[in-house]
Image (tube, rainbow, N blue to C red; front, side, top):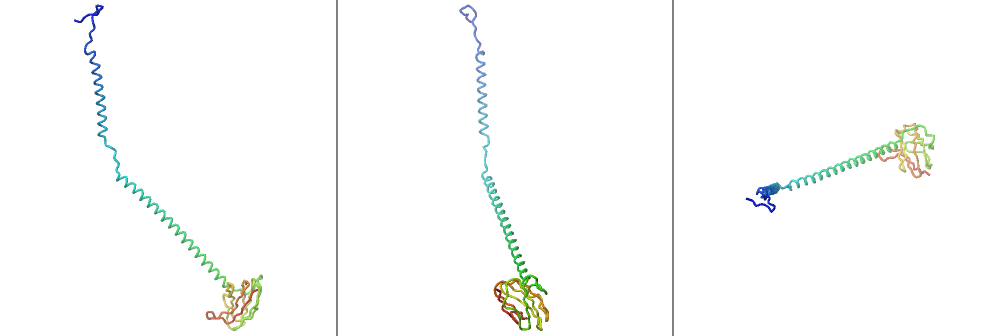
Length: 211
């Protein structure tokens, strides 16, 4: 039997479960937390590490480098092609211009035949026979109209050459025919002649001095 207290009242004796139950609960909680911690570490331990495939990375890198090189080479080839096209076009244009200029000069060298002198030209009378040309040897610079009469018995042309000038009739005057040849003369020396049938052959010639 339990002893009483000093006041004579009954003494309180705690049961063992009043002290032991909370302690067991705390131990269970601690064990559960430890179990959770161990489970977490196990999951981390068994987790697969992140692996980087170096071979795949290098392949991708080299593919990018090769692609860039191909694109650069293509761009350079396109630039070269465009430059070649431009140069070819320029050369073609220059050649065409030279051809046109040559044609114009050739056409200008052979003056269209006229029968009357222009009003702004200085008239010079010329008489041709089969072996002679009668005309002044001293002339003034400027636009000149050579009024040429063929007094010979054969068809023969009249030509003026010198100072980058080479002019003649398109159709040689027939015997008794008169034509007009317009030439712009500059200061210097010229030759007026009747070209023969052979190359570089002249049946008659006169040296002209323009002052």
